[in-house]
Length: 168
Image 1: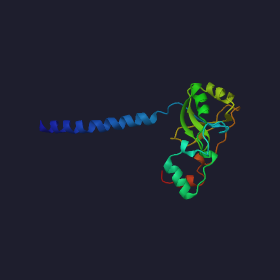
Image 2 (image 1 turned 45 degrees about the vertical axis):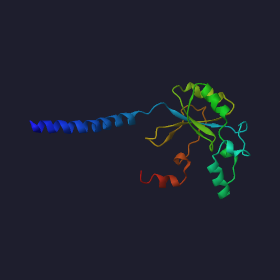
Image 3 (image 1 turned 120 degrees about the vertical axis):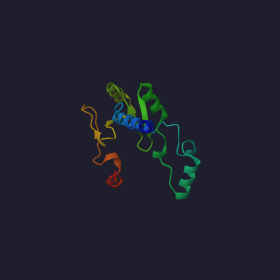
Image 4 (image 1 turned 180 degrees about the horizontal axis):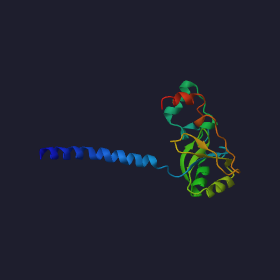
């Protein structure tokens, strides 16, 4: 009888671990909605200025740039908030924003929104569909009206991509 009691304790201790293991595979299998990269045309109308970096950079960042002699350039300016507001106003979810590449990653469940985006005057005519990280690749959109640029080396890391992913 003691033997069965000890087995019950072991099962009670292992059950949360087994449950966590099963749930983690369920989460990994879910891809979510398709994601796309959109590029904005410019930063001309942004309310920020490189003459007032304290409005968009931290004091620590500004001090570091002064110490290292790094100039504040247009790429440091945030994406124009009006552009972001107009995209989200169309019912499109923004996942991430890149001020250096002047673009954003968006999530769509309906590809008809892509035509809506291309009609906006501040969106460049290239939209890239991003495949899930599991495959580590980027797929061209099937529709020929979307101009796409696909780098032969993923994520614009250049030749360092192989060094970063050598042991992954």
